[in-house]
Amino acid sequence: MSENALPTPPDILRCAYAELVVSDLAKSRAFYADVLNLVVTHETEDAVYLRSLEDFLHHNLVIRKGPDPALACFAFRVRAPGDVDRAEAYYKALGCRTERRKEGFVEGIGDAVRVTDPFGFPYEFFFETTHTERYMWRYDLQTAGALVRFDHFNQVTPHIKPALKYLNDLGFKTTEQITDAAGTIYGAWVHRKPTVHDTALTGGDGPQLHHIAFATHERHNILYICDKLGALRMSDSIERGPGRHGVSNAFYLYLRDPDGHRVEIYTQDYYTGDPDNPLVVWDVHDNQRRDWWGTPVVPSWYTEASRVLDLDGKLVPLTVRDESREIDVTIGADGFSYTREGEEMPSWKLGEYKLGHQV
Ligand code: XXG
Ligand code: FE2
Image 1 (cartoon, rainbow, N blue to C red):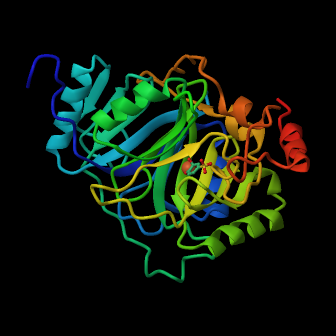
Image 2 (image 1 turned 30 degrees about the horizontal axis):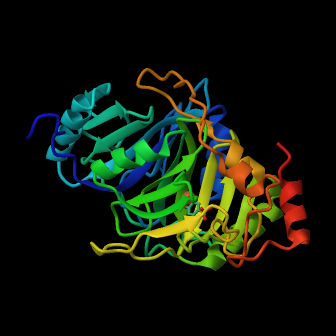
């Protein structure tokens, strides 16, 4: 190890679970277990542990009752037990606060380290977990809206460039980015498992949780979830979509849970596992970058997010983004967005964008 060099980072396999603090456990349980049909692995008086139908990990989501609805942790699974030691040494070398618990922080997870990372996000690294039954073949339990895998996290930070360098150093590879001609980065997607991402950075006041995402097998599963929410008179929990992303090419839907935590339902992005997987760069003015059909992004999607907690369970203070904000450069009244490069957006379409910007 040369002077100033960091120790070897942990070998991260994938994003594994998120722990969310919720204000009303019964309401949140109803949303995740009864409406979205996640499987309940375990529950206590103050927490419910849920998983997607194909996973064998103990859980992909912990909802815990608490005073401040917020993200308590983004947890990553590492390749081997020794990678938990590597993670601890790595974050210590970065000067971050770390906490190691051989018995784990939550049910179903063994030896783990939690850290507050250099950008204020609560990360956990673990290998040991209690295996559960995969419900892959349990078609008797699956519904038309089956959430089959945990797909990704999305983090809001004002400092995308240095945060992206930190994630790349940690071993994440960038698949896609949204930038402008001046070099400002508005969004970046990075992976360990061979999909478009395990986590992504969204430019804004942070640190905040933008969303967590579960995957379905196909597009029709997402449409069924929309129909079901309509039938339950819960259409107000649909925030954005359904639609087709430009970035990632996935089909998507964004929901807000009873506390406003954002959950994406996502399907059919692409394979990214080759070492020379090409980086995709989108112009922030490309009107199809976030929705391939050009549907305007609702302002709340850019402006609202959930706070995150430190290792003591206290809210991490927010830092305001001082670089230009995507909501202002693309749906502010600038007229610079385009559908075909070199051509202006039709005036009727631009009107829709101005109307959408009521913040
Ligand atoms: O998972 C995602 C997202 O980060 O949620 C958003 C993939 C693509 C997009 S975007 O809105 O940029 O198309
Ligand atoms: Fe996403």
